Amino acid sequence: MKGTFRFIGNFVFIVTLFGILFSYAMFQGGFVSWFLFFGFLPIFLYHIGLLFYPVKNWKVSRKLTKHVVRAGDTVSVKIIIERKIPFPLYYCICEEFISQTLNRVDSRQEKYRYLEQPNKLFNNRKIKKMIFPWFKRRIELSYRLEQVPRGEHAIHAVRIRTGDVFGMIKKQHVFPVTSEIIAYPNERNIHLSEKITSFEQGSVTAQTFNLKNTNVATGIREYMPGDRFSWIDWKQTAKKNDVMTKEFEQEKSTDTLIVLDGCFHDGLNPLAFEATVEVSLSLMETIRKQASQVGFLSIGETNTFFPVQHDPTKHEGIRKHLTSVEPARTNSFAKKLKEEMLKITNSFYVIIVTSHMDDALKDTVQKIKYRKKRASVVYAQSKNAISESEHKILRQLRNEGIGVTILTEDELVTNPIEVKTL
Image (cartoon, rainbow, N blue to C red; front, side, top):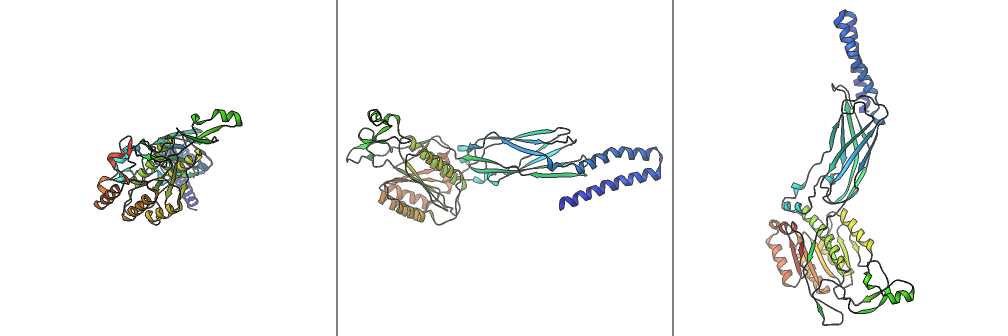
């Protein structure tokens, strides 16, 4: 309705101006009057043509160099405009409608220099380009989305504005062209400190983190995805005409469970939460590469559990979950963690990754240590934001044999990140 009124108003204005000049030439007469009239005639015809020119019939498309990236990557975007009638246009302004999730920047590990001031990483992206099409039938314009943050992002539409040189006629149309970008969390190099573990048989110890004891074979089984090539029993494979692998005795601490705090807390530091997401994914990949089994539990609005198993697709599922996870306003993390631990009967080595520490969480971690015998806490926060009471809680956990790693801006900008397991 608003566009119709604008069209009628422009049409009446141009016709009225034309009528005034024509009347002036008829009544005044002379060379000057008719010169003004015929001089305005091409402009009048152009404005009438522009007024009826169908911009909405243009074909607009968007091409992205990559749809799946890592946080911090750059995506090149090209907008292609095609039109059948090469009506001369002096200018066009193309504007993108992007989701608010792209109003952050991710400079990978360098972003943690602003851990105390996370608002500095917010950038109101406005993508607006001016082009001069004239008679072109095909118009291309390119731009770059730099430092794409973690998450699932969308570019919803393209708005095109055009008009005449004098600004008397302005036309615009929104083309619903949707493109999606998925930015996986950035993986960091993690260095795990050693801890002593023992085998099921009793008193033998090993200074390795969550590795399988491949010295003592206890049987054979069918090959499963994730098994090492060196574990294949060739004699049994030839005999059974199926790929068989040796089954080895496990260490007590082979299975690891990483728990992510996905709950919203008062005064939550969004950049510290990003650190917990990246560290969780990096820990999972580091432990998995060491030939150990690792499970993942995300506690937020809904609890998401990925059990320990030899399944490569599980790791992709965890990666996708961590791509979209955001802090959720729900019950306290400590309470939900306690409930989830009661449901899990397996003997895991539990690593809790959080950006919030209080007495309730301390009590829960102590109970996990009592039941599971092995527990560790990775705490990410700006060094100036850690209160004395939080320091006291962390010291108490250390004194009870619980591994505590504090990740501030000083640790998060380094490569690799060191995580203490005891």
